[in-house]
Image 1 (tube, rainbow, N blue to C red):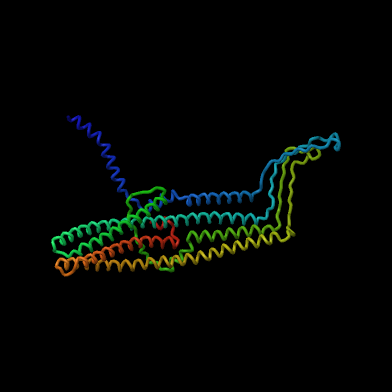
Image 2 (cartoon, rainbow, N blue to C red):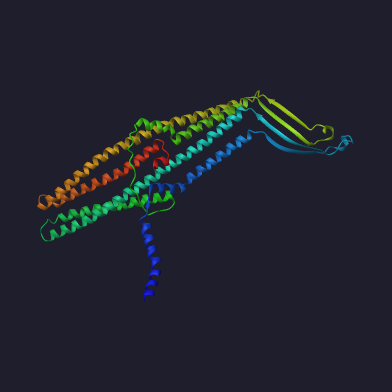
Length: 425
């Protein structure tokens, strides 16, 4: 008998462990940082930005190496018409040589190309950081949207349960003649309104869950953590505005201006004198030049006239520089406006939260007093229901503002230029 019991325990133990594991997994908390990391791993835009950096680095390396002289081996063979050459001359004639050469050397052009290449790499890196910022804002919006909808759903269902009990109580009182027949109607109406709230909360929760699943690449039903720090920084608005100069999108536009200026410098260099340098070391030569082992050439080219083609190319590049400078100026002004709005929104939310706390306290006192008066017959059940609705609305409002403050605090940091990692600390 004892052996049978032990055998049953051993057989049931894995099943019990699996059930426990499932229970734990359903209670797993998904933090904002974890959700953001999953979205980052799934984001095609982020992956494309990494490829953009690799492309910029490759172009830069190509530019650097193109500025260096080339080294090659050249071998050629020439066949002549036998009737036109001396019979003592070798036919065909072959020539082989190691060649070291550089064409179109101005130094100015090469320096400008390398400088533009570095700026292009920096531009791509800042664009990647901007994608990280925008992705974090999208994830946090969905994250706090889920929290808000699910908290409202939980509270609404609790109120539905209380309203149903209240309805049953009033219906019984009306049945025995201790209450007016209209009293249960008010409770039924409140229950209907709460049902509408429940359906709306379900819709919002499902929508935000779908958005979170889209961003992360997998839909999750994990619980979310409501804990998040509030922005209690004493920094002034001017401090946040100054930080916008370091925003990734501003930095990327600044680097794009430098890239355009580099392209302008390269175009201008076409009007400068250039050098062609070549050195040949021969491995074999025709008979008449067999004694010459090497030679070197130095050619200076001075542009004189090109029908104005380069002048128009310079004008086009100047226009490109001006366009990017205008885009940078517009982005700076836009960033300042966004910071001012984000700062104002957070201050307003804090003031609203203080007022909401006072409102909840007043609504709770009102409901408690109405409950006491209802028991004494001083107020009707409808008046008590209205007091309950006011308390419900006040509690929902303060919860929504609390979550809004967290999202606005994060938004202000990102708008002012904080990186995604800094904003999540």
